[in-house]
Image 1 (cartoon, rainbow, N blue to C red):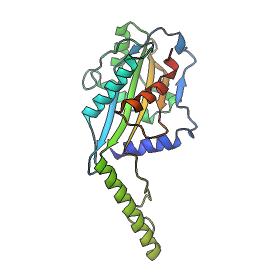
Image 2 (cartoon, helix red, strand yellow):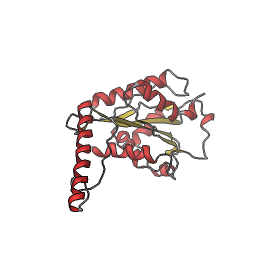
Image 3 (tube, one colour):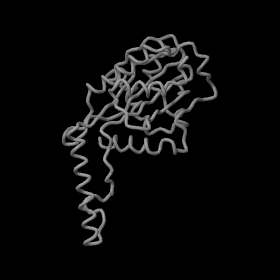
Image 4 (cartoon, helix red, strand yellow):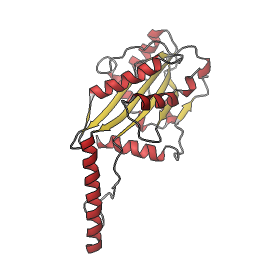
Length: 234
């Protein structure tokens, strides 16, 4: 699960320099003219790194992240329906798997992704043509684990420098020469709007914070949500 931290770091470093868009909307739909979007229960995948810096999916933090997003949206004037429950462990697991691919998708090519059958049904059953899904993808590091990583990276850098001076061999303890210490937490939010008549994604956003953003802190999530959904604020 270490790749989650790596991905978030790269995304935050390159987000503004990337050639590909982070926001994409097809020319076939004008979001401002849609009266109401079916708001599907958000899905969160939060990894916690323990004191030994080993990562694992944590249901409690993931549920908390989902609830924070849902509560923020329910208190605002977004043109969304009441939250439509989704069982991401069973009946709607295909949606969870689908959203899990969002970090690897070029927003401009999102239309190539096949919409899950159960997502089509949730939107169609709501009586709305368009549905919106939100995915939170992040990690949290314990204080002890964070301090441990700082000590390990610092010791590795000093040792490699000493070895290189003596032998000319560089990066012996850390071949990647990555001595950067990860932020203690990070989060990226994704949003996709689906047209249930065509089964196409007509709007897609990945919102990457410029600074470390905690996935279960209300203030951090609130800021990201409003940037994510700026096209819907009315």
